[in-house]
Length: 602
Image (cartoon, rainbow, N blue to C red):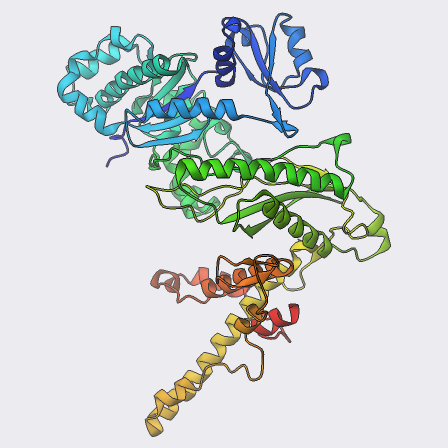
């Protein structure tokens, strides 16, 4: 399918949280409203503002008191709290009702957030052109705008030159369908929304907000250069973070229109091949990412922020909040299992520590075999204790320097699924943090260490996993060298005596009296549900205190297998890539096998 053949619509709810509050309390209709959450300091932090309040100068991220200075009659609606944290249940439920309406128009529906969804209506637009082309009238598109055109001129062109303006004709029909979608959403839910209609997701999102509220905008492909003249690079999806800053700094540009002057070869040279090609295409309004059907969220999670003086200062407070967070996660996962017939298999604990006055993020992926709150809390707390016990200081000076720590309890999440197949993994989805002084390891502070092999600075809590990487590289190199030498010997013997097959069998590495990994992993016959977890990788029972080390083994094993794969023809021909890999695979002397390393670690 051509990149101009698709018709993609982004539906974005207008000030959604405020609309939900207005619907729950009709007396708020037409009044300036802002939604605030968390602490009440200076009126609370604003997370949503309706348009009457915006007209008075109120913006998001203001404090409630500052908003009242701008607009004295503003109403501050507060997000309810459960277990000491914001409860967004009513907004999630409202978003589900909207999604149910959108699903009636196309099965290709991708929910991007609680108040946004992408729809691919290409087939519906094609079918409507054949039978309803006469409905492309201004009166049927009274809330529609077109970038670079007057709506009446645009419709005249597509209806009188349908063959020449075939792509634009599909966009016009897509806009007619979008008008019907928005009307149906309002009729069924009472919520107003805006829409962007374009050939891909990125462009649809760019134009969706041009004529808010309760309006929609079409972007013909020939109008992309005119739009890009006014669009900052950081407004484009995928360019709003660090990569966008890097792009503007390296290329010395700020508008999307300036990106088109760079050739594909230049962009590939500056970045990598995939990124360079994507930048080259998006500078011309081309993007091939498809709308991926997804009705339910990929993630289920919760987090809580304790900035500044509200930082947690005891192990008891940490345990309390871990229990509160896991209680919400357990409740929401049980509900998700009933509604979507899926179960999570892993949970990600994400945290941030302050090391020498610098925030350093860390995370652990842990097996999840139960939705019971106390089991989830136990897994998280044991992981925290082990991580903190690994962060030991090398000197009393370091031990006394910066004793505060930050911990972030991540959202646990389910992988999105098709039909009724259960989910198999969890994805982290969190950006908030807890500050904590740990009493489990009062004298141990997470410090930085320099790797003797690659000279990189690594967190001490991550140092063992980093060394595992070098162990795996070393074993790969040793075994490849051994196999090559044995193969040469085997070929020589084959020519001499024809006993190649027997000799090849003798080239396998022997472990002697070394205890095998399998025996190590299942050495305890007394393990049960009370003292162990079932590993999702090898289905073995492992003690609670050993589960993290055990998962490290699987990580190292997967890394070993991935590195030891046979190279493809393209990678063999790429001499530059091979040289780069060889540089990374530096010799590690006096290093035992990975089996010996894991047993010694045990």
